[in-house]
Image (cartoon, rainbow, N blue to C red; front, side, top):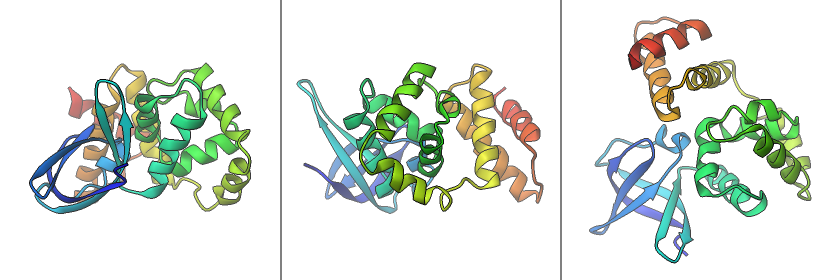
Amino acid sequence: MITFLEGILEESLPTQVVVNVHGVGYEVLIPLSTFDKLPPSGQPIKILTHLQVREDAHILFGFISTPERDLFRLLINHVSGIGPKLALAVLSGMSVGNFKSAVVNSNTGLISKISGIGKKTADRIVLELKDKLGIAAAWEAASAEHAPSEEEVRINDAVLALISLGYKQVEAHKAVKRALAEAGTAGVTLSLEDLVRQGLKLML
C-alpha cells in the first residue's frame, strides 16, 4: 500500500497532479479541495494517497490533509453505490466540515447539489453514514467547530449556482476563486450575486 508520496510537484491540474519522487513521476487524481492548497509547480510536496488496485490499472488518489482522505475512504467503503469518482466529487463540491454538518443535520438538499450526486444518493449517504457506530456522534460534537464561515458559504453557493446554469464543476470553482482573488486585490467584497455575476463574466 502506498500511503503517501513526498517529492517535487511537476504538474498540477484541478483533477490530477504529477509528483516526481526520485526521478519517478506518479500521476495522482485529486479533488478540488486539494488543488486549492497545492504549492507552485517545482516546489516540494507531501501528498497523502489511497491506492485502488483494479485488474486493468493501479490508480492513486491524493489528498493534502488526513480529514480529506478519511472522508474519501469512508464514502467508498461504507456507502453503497459510491465509488472513487463520486467520492472525489463530494470533496470537490463541499469542504469536509460542511459535509459532516450536512450529514449530522440530514441536509440531503445541500448534498444533492454536488455535481453527480442526486437526491437518492444524498439520502443514502446520510442514512448509511449516520448508521455507522460513533460517526454521527463524533461529527455532531465537532459540528460547531467546523461550522462553515460566511465566506465558505458564499463560495459554495456561488459554485452551485454556476453549476445549476450548466457549467462544469471545475470551471465554476476556478471562476469563483479567480473572481474572489481579483476582488481581494482591488479591496472589494463581493456579495453572492456579484460573485456569481463575476464568475459568469470570467467564463464567457
